[in-house]
Length: 304
Image 1 (cartoon, helix red, strand yellow):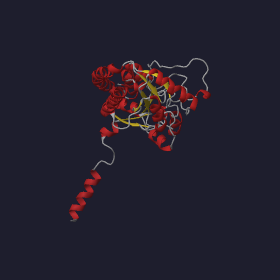
Image 2: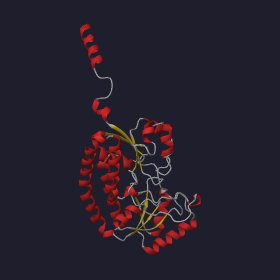
Image 3: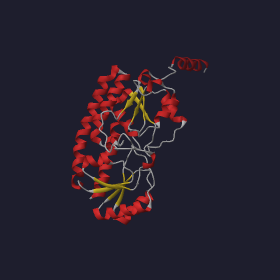
Image 4: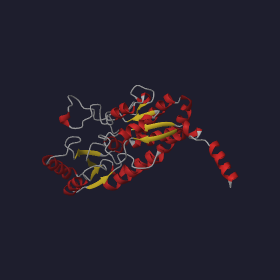
């Protein structure tokens, strides 16, 4: 027994105490929102260990800043942000992390909106009385799957700044992802072709990129001003317009007021459909493609 115990002690002493070389070599990347995490994993593959600050069921406009988020960023090699002020709260998290590798302007700071042409850029004066208006344009571009090639190209460039020796691997991973995305886009376009030109109302103005891609017309939002609960007069006008224009669907997010959306839809003779604004589960290319697949199927059913 004594010799066996001695042997076990020797084996324990010889065993590696830290992570494997493969695990230690992985880039630690944090994205602000889950769909950017998935696209980062599609590009990074086995070379990255990715995490997200926001969960798929959380409103990304107004995330509660907690110490745990700063801890996530403290050891990060790179941070992928949505930009266009959707995740402006992340600036405070970055400051609290005390991590110079991921501050704006550093090699590890990756703004995925670079190269994106924003929609709904306001003209004239913008102030808080107008609600949660984004001066740089609508920030929900990740919901258009046809913009994933541009987003992943930006992620490749960002990861390659941090780990230039892996650039070719990142490019190969992106090419493999785009090889899956291209036939999926054709399939989604075909699935939504019968409802092209159909009209919908959104709870919040999240969906204009997705609607534009597949020819769906948004005639209004339940929110009179972004991020502010609507008043009775606005709802009455909206319901009347929905009736006049034959709106078939009210599109909501997981954090919307479902009871209010259901009432508006019922009075206007429409259906409520919940779409995935941000991935709720899964990772990588599979999660991104599956989320869009589910959105397309839900829209196709609701708008027929």
